[in-house]
Length: 275
Ligand code: GLN
Image (cartoon, rainbow, N blue to C red; front, side):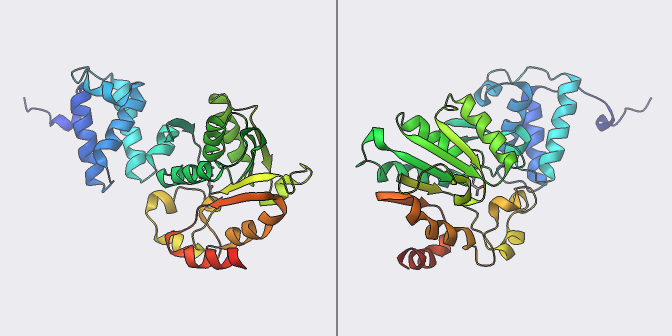
């Protein structure tokens, strides 16, 4: 009898072999960081921590696990971001749940939180009032809440779907009663809060990519992340302009506005702020 070509058989594979195969498959599909992605998907699938994969590389996967792993790999090969597939990303050591309605928190945005904390060092802890515009997954507001136990925090978003995720994240980290989540278009969400001239800090990582540039970004971003969380209008500055223009009415004396913007935008943003 002829031997069956092995790709037609359902062979049991070990964690070690699955990892290797997954990495190769992802690399062949030009997914960057193939090894790390393979580890993330496999540990998500098995409910293990990443390092635990290497503790029992001989453990066999069940047929169901192998099948599900293939599904996850197919999604990743279609360039769906690994964070959406596993439904989470880490931000300043806190796990944030995500959905397709929320931007994936970026490591560079962690620096925004560092800047914000620095800006508040001269403010009396009990007097701190923070507004986070475009909160998305809530990552910024929630990390501020964990760092500043006395601060009062308002977080807004125009996407009700994002707010559902943000509230879940706040709850998960025990910050639900610390943050007021409000729905609306930038400052319009704050109508009726009485926060005018009260904010020690306005924080935002607004959408700031020029509309035409989005299609040129990697498929993970262009095809999968919510356009509303990325697109900043023709010059990328539409929201930044509105945030700067409205800041004056909400900032207290000596209040700070801390915003993220694009690498090439600092000159324009400085001009807008000076105007
Ligand atoms: N504030 C969220 C973040 O920084 C969402 C930002 C956005 O959607 N533009 O990840």
